[in-house]
Image 1 (cartoon, rainbow, N blue to C red):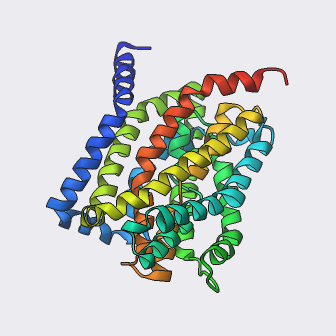
Image 2 (image 1 turned 90 degrees about the vertical axis):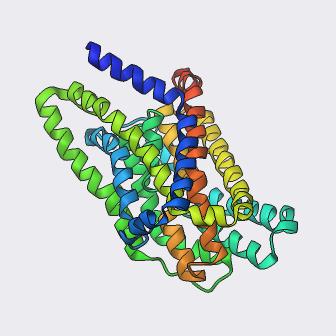
Length: 356
C-alpha cells in the first residue's frame, strides 16, 4: 500500500471510529438548517417523483454504487448458504415483521403511551407503523450490507426476491392488518424506487466491473471500491442532514409525538435483528450472508410506506407522520446494528466453519 493510500485508510478508520458523533452532529445540523432555512428543503422537495425524492436518491446512489460494482454474477446458483439465507429473510420479513410491528405499535401507542396520545392519533400512528413493518428495505440495505462486509451478490438477490414477494403480499397483508377493504399499491413509487435503487445502479455497476476486470482483475475492483469509500461516508452524513432538514417541521413541531413513535420503531428494529441474526447463527450461516439477511428486515422501504399512508389517510395524517419518524430513526438505529454485526462477525463465522 502506498503512503497516500495508507493515509486515506487511516483517515477513514478515524472517521468510522467517531461515526456516532458525526451522525449526531449531522442530525443537529439538519434540524437547524430545516428550521432556519426551510426554503432550501422546500426546493429539494420539488424534485420528487412518485414519493421518491431525487436528492435522496442521488445520495443513496453514492453509498450503494461500490456494492453494485462488487456484484459477481458468476456466483449465482453456486454460493453456499444462499438458500437458507433467502428462507430466513423471507420468513422474517413476511411472517414475523409485519405482525410484530403491529403488536408493538398497538402495545406502546395504544396502551402504555395512552396518557399522552389521543385514541384517534394512536390509531393513525399504529397504521403508519404497520405500513412500515410490511415494507422490507430496497435501497439502504445495500449500504448496511457493505458496512458489514455482506455478500454483494446475495444482497442483490435477496432484495430482488423480497420485491417480487412485495408485489403480491404487501397489499393484502396491509389490508388485513389495517382492517380495510383493500390497499392500492402506488405502482409509480414501487417501480421507480426499484429502478433507482436496484436496476440502474446494478447495470451501471456491472459495466464498470467489466471494465475494471479487463484492466486489472479483482484487484482493480477492490481499489475502485476503496477510492469510493470517502465519498460513501460523505454521502451518508449528507443524507442524514437532508432527511432531518426535510422533516424538521415535523420533529420540532411535535417532538413528544416523534419521540413516542420512535420507541416501538426502535424496539422493532432490535427485535427483528435479534430474531434473524440469532436464526442465522443457529443455521451456521457466514456473516456475509447473515448480516444482510438480518438487516433487510430491520430497515424499511419508507418511500412505499409514506406513499400508501398519504394515499389512504392524507398528507397531514398521524399515519403519514409515523412513516416519517420511521425514516428518521432508521439511520442512527441501523448504524448501531451494523456495529453489533461487525463486533460479532468473528463468532458467527467461527461457528459457520466449525463442524456440525
